[in-house]
Length: 237
Image (tube, rainbow, N blue to C red):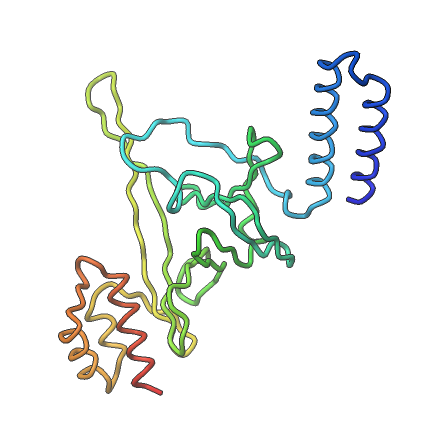
């Protein structure tokens, strides 16, 4: 990359000396082209920009969007092909299950290769590519990491609704699945009961904690299981 930066400054100086103020339009275009070429060269040298072209969704959605949290690029980090990249603009498409990075001027995007991503963080949320026994391999979000762990897999799907013979409405449906990591085993969490069944001799204490803290599994399942598992780790020390 140092070579490309050096070449850029040499070429930039030549353009400045030759054209100076005589042709500001040509000078501006040459400057923009040199900057773009420099960025392209540096991207080619970076192992991060090694994936496939991302195909954006072509329909307009009446409700929701296909991405995790936001449909705008936000700064994150990713462990890709064994190398950590920081301050990377990213989005996570939950319909396609693809991590997306922009290329140069944001007019085109890359989808990183899932199997080459060990982990990534986006907007304060940490994901890892896991292959748990009995569960599909993919990206799992780490929600709580103590002696016991709580993980989630996130996905979205597109619903198509024909309003009439000529008009179709597309909406986004979200689905989150939760798992308990205990003694090296991933166990699906689908209800309050599924969590209590794993608690063993601590079930009575957990039930009391649920009542005392008024945990609402139906209205806020994710928050409730994180609090309950955290308490379970505390009383199991």
